Length: 495
Image (cartoon, rainbow, N blue to C red; front, side, top):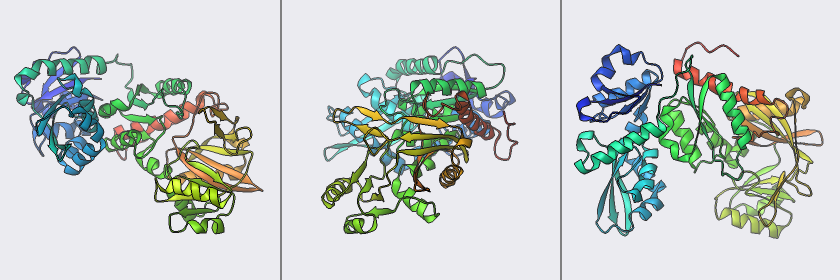
């Protein structure tokens, strides 16, 4: 993949990095050799990104050509919005206070060169701001008021405004950026698409194990991707890729949602998409959605402080209480008496204004139906942990005990289970979902719809094996190809 640095005047930029081409903005915008490039990465270092300037058009036309500009038009617009600046300040507040705790002056300017600062003590903050506003050269202004530091503005800076004493460091940071993270890859015989797989190997309950990630990587290469494992500090690199596959536990108030939202805004094919994350990670939304569309679920009540006394009348005992954003059996409590109910609800309502109460439906196992692109993908039985009412039991020392998992062909599972799961998942979208159901006395009930479902080596892939990973990657690849061609383009042939 070609790497271009675009500047107003090449004489302003003395950097000479192997594999990186220096181009004038005028040449990039008008010379056919650049418009004909496929999949180039464009680092836009023009003097200005104001509307209809050369800098603005470089990023705009780069996107139209299927190139990957940094900054993107989305970032350029975000830098103009005071709302986005305030949100960034709120998000990074603790890091800002810690970084500037030693400074006595009322203002401070932080220069950010490819995610780095000349002072190592500010590197974490510089990278965090670069991740939120991915642009090569930035200057953030902070003020100290009433005992706290606040982010007031963040703007791109032209090379001509870099202080003389910063030039050597800036060139070093740029060289490191290109050489260690942007080195050109060997050009394959046929064009391939860049895929980012967001994964944290240290996550305690990750939706995929290292073995499963390795199989996703293998499948990605097989369908036509050039995959790369990325982490939360790689937010600023998203514009380089054509697709994003999230394999971390998702949440709205979390970097996974920010990755999904940024990827969607940049036009990447993304699983999980941000709307699916919002919908699936809130059980209040799911309860309302399933009820509205007549999808069978346990007797459910949305609880707040003014209707606690209605829970025994409507739901009964025993019942299950759930925090809206719980995952992996966290934030889920079974209560059998009025005292237990009151204690559990008081604790939950201290953190959320709404809580879910559901009738308890005992069963030996839960059905898990994986749904991809509105079609069933796999079916598993998640058995309850031994002597427990959930599929996972955690003891006082934090040790987890899981029930066994049985996976079968979709055709071997009861049709009504599969059909109900697909119906529920399709209310969310066309991504990758895991739908949990119970069968009690011949009736099926949807318990919840999960984005980012578990896919682990030796469990959910036990029947389809490598074909499970290929199926997921093929859908993502086809969507990325459709995005590269643009709306209305012919779809790729099925493989």
